[in-house]
Length: 587
Image 1 (tube, one colour):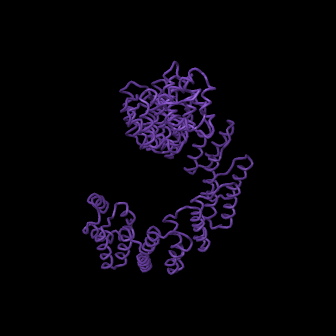
Image 2 (tube, rainbow, N blue to C red):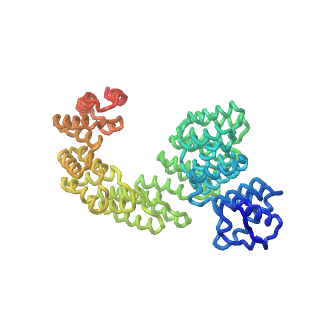
Image 3 (cartoon, helix red, strand yellow):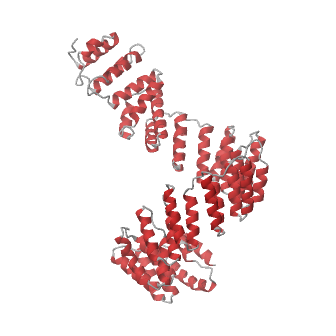
């Protein structure tokens, strides 16, 4: 059989062959040029109108895969998925959708918009697009999931409740809490009725943002709707209250649970115990521990108590809890050991800390970054840099990577022992590892040079940093100038300022305020006022936060400070709100 005539006749002929099952005749035109994307799309749609549709369209769709060099277009695949969905073949449709979902261009708004418009069945569109949202959200492709959701909103396609739940959970895992509320408002607007799973996502978002007010509004909303919170809701609320130190409110949730016949589980108890331990209220924490019923204390329970006792300087009590923990068949993990290790190091008991490390090794408890950093920091504090470096190498043997805390501890240690070259080598290693330097890192280096009265070395630091690959920007000079001013090395700060400007780097409010304040304290009022005038000219403002950097508890210095800040206020270098706050502080 040969197909001739119009394009419409060709489509009708192909459909006739498929329906009659005369696959031999269809093979006569088995070539890619005859079956264009547009033609196949129309054939699929027409076949879906006959009988049950799926018994004709799907075999034809699979037959096309046997044509050499042929691959289904997105349009054809999308059409087949819709046909399968319409005829309740959900599993097959879902599998096919997941195969095409990872094509780079599918989630783009323009492509999605075109695809959604090609099929006008709202129920099928809702099912297919909801699957797509779920797939992207579960695949940690949250941005793509949001793109699909936005297209659904644009085309007034109502998403399934499950899709909304999965998307909200994905956003929570990514820490994008502001988007949780945006998605929630949009889904409610198109008629999706939230259930307790959705509300629990919202409570979780409140907990992450530590937003008590919003959480309480949600609880009132549930009460008005006659919806009963579940154990997850209450646990989230207890955790939120405990994080905020709101013990009375946390205990009131406990009372409400008991009134509603909901037994506290170990998660509830752990949160309540944590809340007391965080505040150092160990007596209340232990009372709560003794009241545990219908639940079994776990590693988290005991570790929380151990950490609490360590932080209140009650190591012996912490070790008793460890003994109790082990008597119940629970053995300390790395988090538990880290709490005890930290306390031993704080007390200068390095030998005992090393014994504890050996115990961890014997019990096959793998040390983590906190373990290693605790010991490295302890050695640095006592100036034993040989042992600190030895432990850093051991850290690498464990398969761990130094983090910013590791580098900072070593830099601080070398500065304390006046080994500046070693400190700078660690600093450059930190940069090579891709970490940024903080103000305190520069401070230690500058302080060390000041002790040696070697301000020329401070002036040489920017060029040295640049030669080692550090991008020189205002943050580097800000740290060096600010510290030089703090140490009353005004001349050095002035030279650094000129050097910075010579490199075309503009100073910010911190630098100008530091210089002005340093001049003022040194008795050079005219230079200080000149800097303030320059700030006014450049429209640089001083914030309350910046003011706090210069506030002091020294009464005699406060008198000097008061005059300086009066000049700042007179020149309008602070907003009206900031002025009021600072004036209240100065009273």
